[in-house]
Image 1: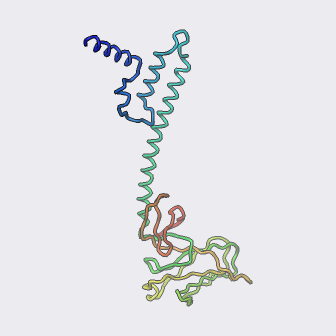
Image 2: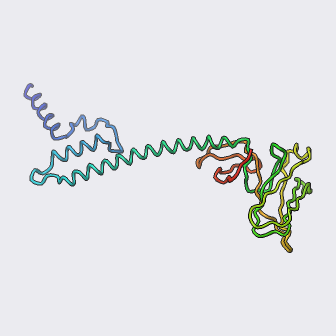
Image 3: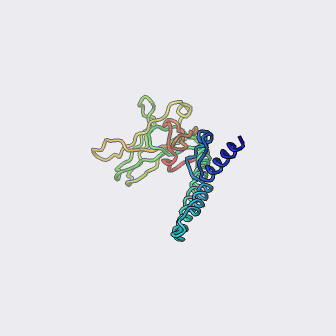
Length: 230
């Protein structure tokens, strides 16, 4: 019996030296790794050095190249973690900066407007060419003209407009005002593109980032906002 045990121990030792697992260990559950770490790399390099041909050893340049390659991979991994951290911090900063816009008015493309905190409706018109007499018309939801401004001759570009001293019933109305703009040029009856100041009442976080919730216009990307006011 002692001879059998001695033989088994010798076989186990030989298998261990050769790096071959016993039948019991072979079927034992192992931890599965999908990436090689620094420890794994050093083990591979040590095994390579131990098993190299003594008559043709690993070239120093190749050895240094492997070390440099591993250092590069390690640096990229570290940089990736750093960039993830920076991205998270930038996301938090965007949330903070976007939240600060709540309660303010932002300039958005559209023709529906409401009075601001001071009771003023304002916006801009994008003139593609010089207007002989730029006209801004303010209508209610029924299409009734409430107010009209004749701004006279205006050069091409962005032209600001506003309606002050609004009646109290319009200020307290729950319906937005519709704005229409015309050049006044002969034969030109098409409406002009307008941008108005609309109130930001909330923010929301989506897969693409933080978005503004703007009254009458829904979700707006903050990058589209070029101007805001109190």
